[in-house]
Length: 116
Image (cartoon, rainbow, N blue to C red; front, side, top):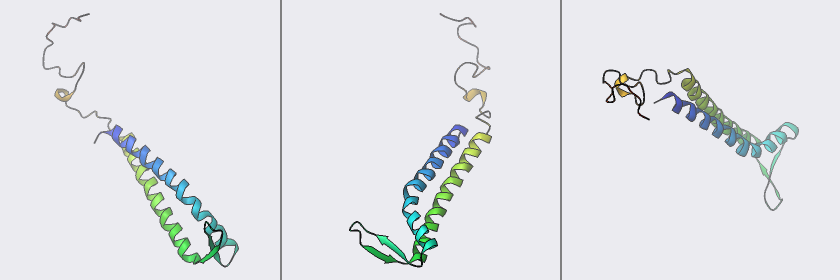
């Protein structure tokens, strides 16, 4: 796979990781505050009736989501690092190159003159 593809994949996966953390991470913010400040945790439904929930289970769910997001960010960083450190397609054989200066073994049909 070419190096520019790794750069694009890395940027996309990093962006997905940050977007997922921003969207899903907000629902765990109140659980973290309740766990630090109080002994019991409550989940407030749409009817505004507090429902008692297990704090440890909510914290475990938060840690699982955080681990998944960290996995996305690490995978994106590694792909980006591999793309940047790559050879940028310098290992292409001359006969496989396209465009000017591609294959020097074949003579030009126009005798080396530029046609306007």
